[in-house]
Amino acid sequence: MYVSVLDGFYKLLHPCITVLVASVSRSGRPNVMACAWNMPVSEEPPMIAIAIGRESYTNELIKESGEFTVNILGREYLEAIWICGTRSGRNVNKFRLANLTPEPARRVKPPIIKECAAYLECKLHNYVDSGECTIFIGEVLDAYASKEVFSKDGWNIEKIGLPLHLGGRLFTIPREIIQPKLRK
Amino acid sequence: MYVSVLDGFYKLLHPCITVLVASVSRSGRPNVMACAWNMPVSEEPPMIAIAIGRESYTNELIKESGEFTVNILGREYLEAIWICGTRSGRNVNKFRLANLTPEPARRVKPPIIKECAAYLECKLHNYVDSGECTIFIGEVLDAYASKEVFSKDGWNIEKIGLPLHLGGRLFTIPREIIQPKLRK
Image (cartoon, rainbow over all chains, first blue to last red):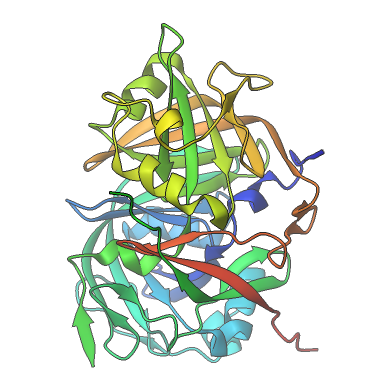
């Protein structure tokens, strides 16, 4: 038996890794928001896409500066993710509110966030509207991660608890690893 | 200490839910491929985006027919996912090879896949190139899921083992659920 899920259909594509997107205003004021709608969109050249609400302050800042950083953090910062995903930086300093520390990035003006385990520094390549969001396509200028939790094979999910957004206030942590059996 | 991950940067945004994208040729021949690069891009109107290699047969078919379905399945079909992600439908019938059953969809010409737990039927809204891929933005015409494993709160991950792609041949299954503590 099927249940119709046009209302809440997006949860079918969750759980999604929830990253922090940092941006900066023309005057140099940084902002940060949580974003679960993200994906790689090219390996060579390296590119990613993020979908951000058209009304959000981050949307405005990325269009203004043409740059953003993607910051990935572990489950111990789940409350910070929640704060960054439910408040607007138009009215509050979310770094202070969420106890996050902005630090200079290597290649772009928006900051990276000290507490994170991995970083992608991006230059806006293109953007396209999609319903109530904008899809920002970023060229990845630099990408680096903590040696403790990431290797060339990917995340060491036994060491880092990666919070993936399931829906509402629910997140899930992947742990178990499986591999397809290969047929001859 | 940081490790540079420009090579393999995309694994920073994994694990990703791995779906099967079904498409159809003008002559009515269906095809299916595995796709980990997918995300919702609007709630209202309902829209999703998938990134598909420009050289792939599915890319050609979606441009040709303007429609596709997204099919989500559990860990018991991991080998089918692997086959659909590593072979091209130009040369083989991947449904037969992966033991998957195409069935008529409700609103679009491409089939849905009987063995799956949830379905999104999509009409192509727009597409944009990004490096070696094309980002297809689809309007969700219908979405439905098995009552056993999905409710309005999202996936019941205790009941369904959702395979998320980590990198290479590694997949991970989310199980543990966590919630942020709310501050007053």
